[in-house]
Length: 233
Image (cartoon, rainbow, N blue to C red; front, side, top):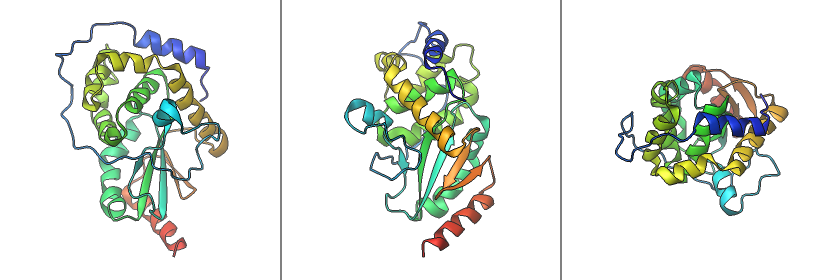
């Protein structure tokens, strides 16, 4: 899956070349309530040791965590924002995991970018340019509206519309897509996950280190989570 970074920069630039982007355009999907997201330190097997959580780039690449920092079980989700199976997980399975385990303090979820293609990379970059406390709400908007922006004839314009949900204006949106350091940072973490854990497709999950691949039903996740909880007692 590893990208040749220069080619990706060019692909993103070509895909999102200069086009009209009106501040009066309305987003293509309705707003949703945001989930609390933090960049609080959380041990992560998937983080590259070369990534420093200092300065602006460190903030952009910091962990996005849903749930309590001291939850006994950690789910690391590797997803691509253009992946239909990832969208299905966020629509159908994650709400059940949130209600049963995340909101009760038993599980925390860390979202890992694993972009499959230039458009997915661009969406991941824009998501990280928004405020961390709006991150999961913005992901929900992206996944719910995936068919609208990901299959559009003008994906840059559609993604720009969606970006308004994260309070990302035109200038910030364009600057975000030109941030080569952010692109390389996201790609570096994805490459590290591929090399160290054999992540090859999306969605793939690590549940306290146990690898779970594919858009499985809630009951399958529940089995793995319950086993992880038992091992912590």
